Length: 328
Image (tube, rainbow, N blue to C red; front, top):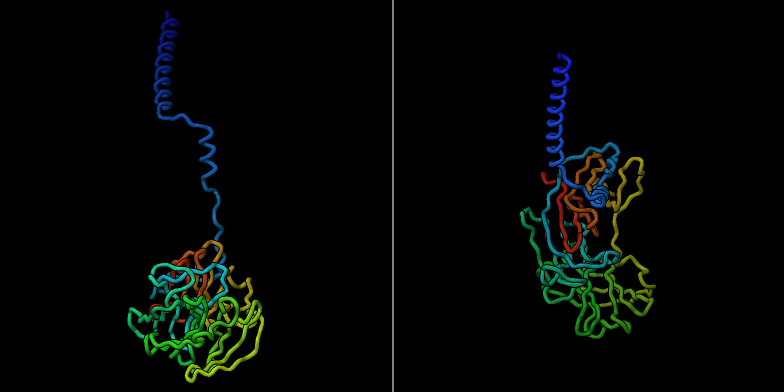
């Protein structure tokens, strides 16, 4: 009799546990959704699994950003591989920056107005002066005293290039055309011109195309208008139109992996980018560095002011100027 009661008890317990298992199973299954195998495969494919390697900064100390943006403007666009370095340029001995701004102040290819930004004053907003009515292409060059600036322009009606000199004292409104009238036509094409260098405050060396593979050099006095014909060279047989970055020889065992490095004139600062799309300013004396808020992939050119206080960065269709040490 007892064995029958035990059997009934065990059987009853099995029924109870079986019911509980069914309830739990249904509850779990009801919380799950059917998975499409193809969808699961695609999800796995698009889920990033790689981790960027840690930057090897060779022991340099990383600081919070030390610089501040002091100027920002639109700038004309050029081809990314263009050799013309005259789209923007600093004066050799003062914090004056010349660049080509679109006529509509928004966007344009190749030409616009010449603009000069004066960072010499202590004003929070630097003074800016513009040319008017000229198709400026660039190739800027300040004279030694930074009282005049030369640049290449296009004369649209004749489809000829020329070189003009503007005075800063007139806010760029007083200009001299070095190849006035028919003298601008020097070959059978558009007669391209290039500004090479100033010999003095009044004398400038320029070149003009004289054929398919020929350039003629001239020394022009901007006061008297006299022109001395120099030698003929092959195209680009001079240092005009080339944008120079200040790149020193360096040991990559000591320095980080630097792309597009550019040293300041005094050798203290280095602008560089890296493979992780970061943009850096490195103090070559203290081995401290900080990041600029610019994507490295968008940077076209950089230029340091003569004293290393400022760096101008041209990226996409814009130009930004940063003061390196804002607390100075």
